Length: 276
Image 1 (spheres, rainbow, N blue to C red):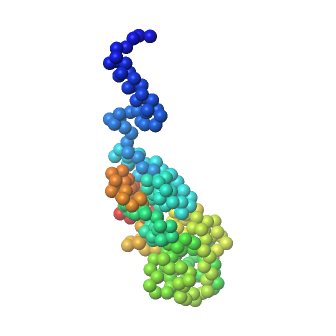
Image 2: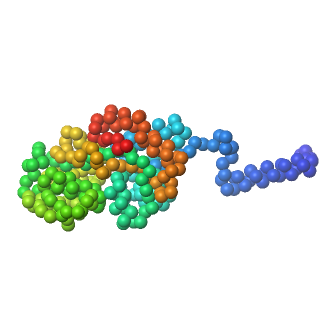
Image 3: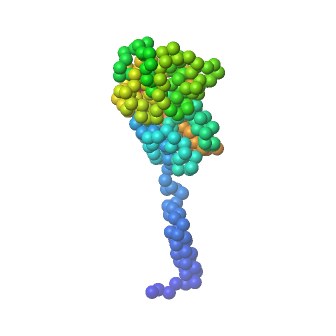
């Protein structure tokens, strides 16, 4: 073994200890000049929103941002994962839903930028016209507060029921003021309603779940929410204080890109619209 000078010995020892420290604590060994691009872990609901996120991911990559997509099948999970720090952002919800989640769970989550709007609709395998809903019909609606309220407002806007005044975007079945046809409102998990549709006279179904069940909102919905000035536009959500981080701004820009807008038009042909 060669004998090192004292100076070289000290340098060799320092390098060895430095390497050992890197290995021990798991620090990256590459320099800042070749550090990997910024990344965000994004939670979404699987299905059509996954397709949209994939387009945004490709756009973001051109801007040096790596979007890691995490899919969920349950609406209640992405906000919990974001609050816990398992995600950096999610993109699946509208403001009434987030407000209900914050009221129930105390999340410190805020919108960072608009994405899409999916007008909710009423579907039936038994009826050809909304006006043909019979006396005592069984009508499915989502069982979560925001989408349930959204469904009730749609039914009220089309004259099936009336709601107590002043209930805004989140009425409940207890706020039904009149029900001339005495329909039975069946509250179900939003994701399960398409599977239950054959057993119902009709149901209000979120667009992402309708598309997943091969229903075409443009052709199959008997009535639908307004396509303009819709208060249920989705957005990217982040933990409070993160909304102006560079990676988050890049994420928002990717979603609000011309590429995503063109994809929505080509792929969904008006069933899903840009919300920005």
